[in-house]
Image (cartoon, rainbow, N blue to C red; front, side, top):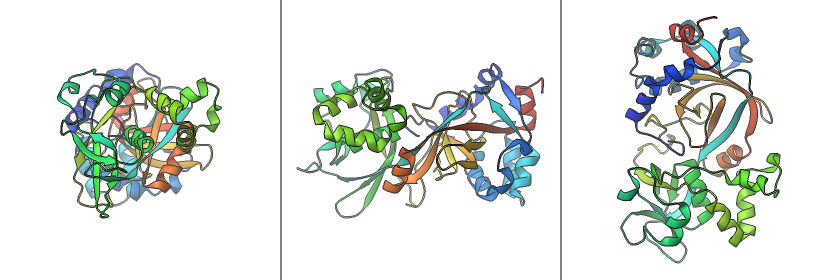
Length: 343
């Protein structure tokens, strides 16, 4: 998952519980002609991504749609025939951010260069709240217990790997291992970017992942304390994906797709649902995505994190995104009308 991934069974449980939460919100039905840029999108690409997780939606509203998706010859007509666009959460503008799969240099053994470990979940952290990031890193609670997956050479990049929730570790021999979300310490996520704004170091529009990295490296002691401002700590697991071209596993335990997968709040947007995004700001985007992931900082009906891919270029693109716009969820027709009975 993106930051706080859950296994498939947990995702489907969330999906099953989504009705009551959504029914208490403002839900507005739209027509496809209301979607800015709808006709110009690559609906075939979106349908391909939708098929990748549709079969996992074990819900009577979705099962027949997924069966038709497999045989659909006209992707645009498929979406227009079986879905209705709905805006969930009223007129408040959406907030779009970006995420990616980092690639770090690392080793399977500690060395003078590779000194910062990625840990598996310790038994004492599996059942709920555990100690903070500071206590884990300063207290040496995990050292010498055989929980290390690998060691990397940059504690700042390791912090951002934890924020992203998955990544690739390139070893000295050129081979690559992939890691995914394994668990967390149960502490709340706190944004260090927002903390820099609160302190008056930067204005909100100035903050990006690159800016934060640079500040932490320019201010080693204060930077370390800044990272401790976020007490949440992510543990990892090795992920075996045979095709290196595939994206990391999302919250539905399936590989996600650059610029077609978004992370959402599953209390408002059903996992697996198509979502039309109208992102404004620099590099405006009008595109049909699929809600295949979640994230610890993704909260609210009009909130999404766009997956940009892996590596430095994807990281640079993802790190600059903090834009307004609108999210429109495509729901099965009967479900859409039940959500908005007065429409």
